[in-house]
Length: 348
Image 1 (cartoon, rainbow, N blue to C red):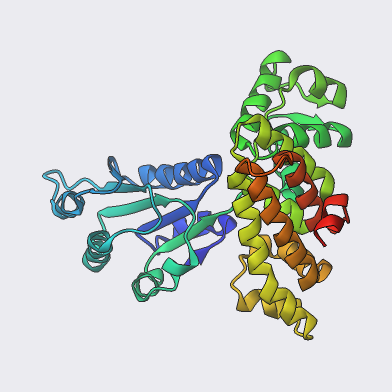
Image 2 (cartoon, rainbow, N blue to C red):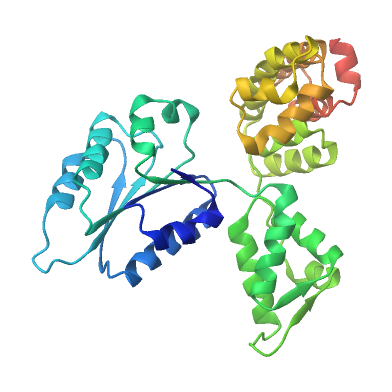
């Protein structure tokens, strides 16, 4: 059963499931959700815990044997499988199916993995076990949701913030929730926070004590470009350059997205509805706003022109022309945002 984060507490109390699978690429949210599950089972008397790190070559019989052993003292036990890949091999699938089939009430299983791909979730094996497990997909917090998330965290710690402070704080920790938590702790320490005081946070305080901990990845850039946010694209691109990301990695992610857009835009130009198009192409719900904006903003001709520009950037990265790859990537993302640039006009 697929669960939302707000359903977790109620599901735990109902004791409806003995297997919880947490999947996602946001370390802090994944860790906190797993901690909530561990705490629940500790309170329920599951005093033993055994962790297995699942990497290539892992011997699944070790897990199966341990899960089959009966404790001399009949103690309840939580098993944890920490998957380095979201796709278990055939031995792993069999081991998980065996754990489900035995349904030992004294054993609970907590699985954590990277984000699940649609290919795995559509397999016969996964569909068979999905009804017998609690599946929580942990999505990263996007730019629009970050301010609200930070506000709730601050209030939990007795810190209030005005609108300008919240905006500045969001900009400085965007894409790095672990850094956000560290900065909140720093604020408490600097203000000698205790239970009887409230910190009033303004933009001046943020400027003085909060480090710029923004951390982006290539996919943040792609989504910003799809959404048409040119200012955000420039900020992310600068961050990626400073982090030493090889420009070919960025170009590859952009061109892959552009090629996926072509058939969707052609369907939109033929009169099909945007929501129906995205559903048919299995666009994840957390990307629908950005992808939908691009489908409506760009034409197929625009995308082919952008792909032609990408070919020139590829040559520049490989030293086959005198163009600056980073400048051209900036022009390319601006083009995705719907802004006509000199490079695009030349490519067109």
